[in-house]
Amino acid sequence: MSGHGHIDPSNKKIALLIAVLALFLALAETAAKSSQTDALNANVEASNLWAFFQAKTIRMTAVTTAAEDMTITRNAVTDEAAKAAMTRQIETWQGRAARWDNEPETNEGRRQLSARAQAAEKKRDVSYKRYHDFEISSAAFQIAIVLASAAVVTGAMALAWLAGGLGLVGIAFSAIGLLKPGLIHLF
Image 1 (cartoon, rainbow, N blue to C red):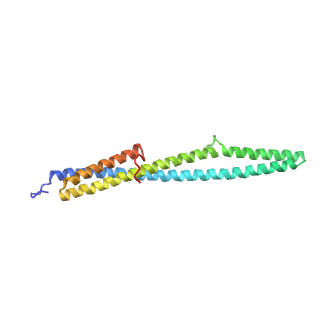
Image 2: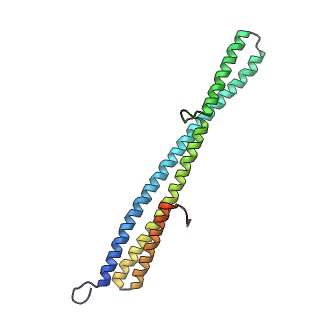
Image 3: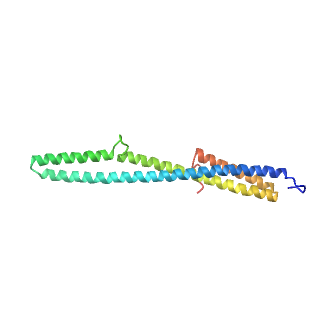
């Protein structure tokens, strides 16, 4: 302010800069939180799918082992009716094992579960990269707001210019988070 109660015109511009930086900060924080939530959800999905995959693997191993054991036993049996019953059971177990390995109609065979889990992991990884880019963007906006505020108090216009530059860095990291997450890896 000048001695007559008027606001210095440069302070109006800095106040506008602070308002714009605060707007971009709010957008970056919202995007960061959304990306973090997406990453956590994708991580839970991947974990669930891998657990389902493991359960199918255990069941598949159990029936495969039973079929192999019964095959050995069947070869020692002389009763044709018993042999036929054992053969049917072996075929049933082998069919289940094959179905548990590949079930494209339900998308729940081991092959499908593995592919779905890997896709969820990829989504998680991209979301985490996006989250980190938005966090860097938020930090740049926060520091820029502090510097712009200090420029108002001190009258040092270099601080206002530095704040504007950091605002551009924040915008750049927001754009990276939206368009090419993880392009610049800082930590």
